[in-house]
Structure formats: structure tokens, C-alpha cells
Image 1 (spheres, each protein chain N blue to C red):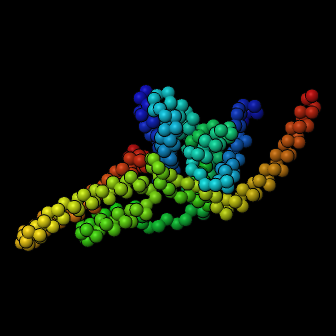
Image 2 (image 1 turned 180 degrees about the vertical axis):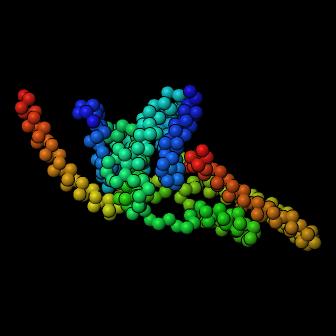
Image 3 (image 1 turned 45 degrees about the vertical axis):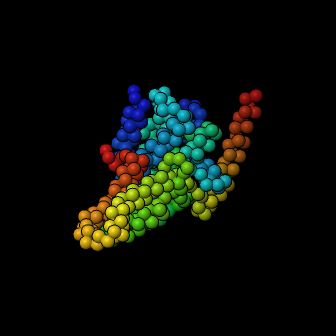
Length: 200
Length: 117
């Protein structure tokens, strides 16, 4: 079997087995196992069929993993996966990522130029997004915001004020577009890495 | 379970023990899941590597460990685990219990071995 297909099948089986878990933990578990597979394959230095098979065998069956998650073989606590979570800090209403995305999209439309910049600033505090993702998002914003500047600044210097005034309406969409594209990039690149299970 | 059917890491025995081993490893310093799996596996304490993740989730829920997402040089951000004060306390209790349990088992097994000789 194609090694990548074997990985997909394994993760799909895990996701299906994890259906009784709460949605958030279910997605998290699948993401954790997916990351484990990636790290194990990087460690092995190969992604061929036999390596993938060995990595998946060493993980154990999806049912086995979910059984431990639900406490049916863990045997240490009460086993209820949906029971109280005393140790976990209460979740904030909006995560850093959500606020960053809101600033990039809605903020970009309401406060041109400033919105996306604030969005990027908030995004820089995110621990879920990698440095590469943040830099790429910043680059997207910078490049697209540079377009109106490149058009307006020379026009101002050459004294074409009327052109600048009439064309602002045409240029503004660029400003909103910058944030929206950066936000879209962040969402897509993150969902590829972290939340494959929500797709099924 | 039929006695003798459990082979290496003895799953029945490792129940409840492995997570304390995780706490002990974290007392040495923070670590991430994959690294913990590798250390436990090298000691033969884990057969199904995937079962470590539910165990870590339980430790998180019980507040025995805290976690920090940190960027890694290559690849996605990594979740680092640290032991909490609660975790330290649980580990201390386990250490005392384990020592007396182990000594008791050792004594009985040694007695059995003596009789066999």
C-alpha cells in the first residue's frame, strides 16, 4: 500500500475510534499522533512503505490508544474522559490566533493599514503558528500593501493630486485584501498541520 | 489476565507506573512528547507508543504537568511539558509507595528463588 495512504488510513481509523471523545480532545489526539508519525519518519530518514508500517505498528492500534484515553485500560483514574478537568486553566474566550485573524480580516476593512499590522503584531505572540508562517504572513501583507504605495507616492510627487483622490477607492480593496490573504494563508497552513481530523 | 501471558513491559504492571515515570523524567527537566516516548521505549516501558499521548493528556487535565508551545527550528511548534508543584507532590507520594511495594515484592520473590534452588 502507498505509505502516505497507509498514514491517512491510520489517522482516519484513529479519528473514527476517537468519536466518543469530546471534539476538541479528539482533534488534538489525532494531531498529536500525526505529529508523532512525522517525527518518527524524519528520525528514520525514510518514508517508504516498510518504514511507515513499522512506525504505525509501534504506535499500537487506534482502538488501543483510544481505550487508554477513555480509561478502559489506563486503570488509574475514574476513566471518564468527559469528567471534570480540575487542573486545566479556564479557556480564554478568544485565543491569540482568533484575535489575530479578526484583526487581519475585519480589522483590515475597518482600519485600513492599521488593522493588518495589529493583526500581525498579535499573531507574533502565537505559539501555535511557526516562525515561518508568521514571516510568510507578514510578507504577504507587506507586498500587497506596497502596491497602493507604489502607485500613490510617485503620483503625489508628480503633482497628480486629482488622480490620487479619484483612485483611492480603487486602491482600498488592496489594503483589505492584504489582511484577508494573510489570514487565509495562516488558516490553511495551520489546518494542514494540525486539524486534519475536523475534515472527516 | 492469565499469569505468564504478559510479555515484556508487562502491560498489567506498567499501568499507573509509566505516568509516574513521565513525571520523574520531567523532574529532570522539561521535554516534549516524542522525546519522552523515546526514553521510555529505550527502557522497555512502553510497547504501544501511541498510548503515551492519552497519558500525557491525563497528566495535563489533572494539573500534574503544564505545557508551553515553543517554536522548533524545523517543523511545527512543539509542546513542551513541565512538572507542576502538584506533579512533584504526586511523584513524591508514588516514590515512597513504590519503594515499599518493590521491597515487599523483592522479598517474596527472593524467598521463592531461594526455595527453588
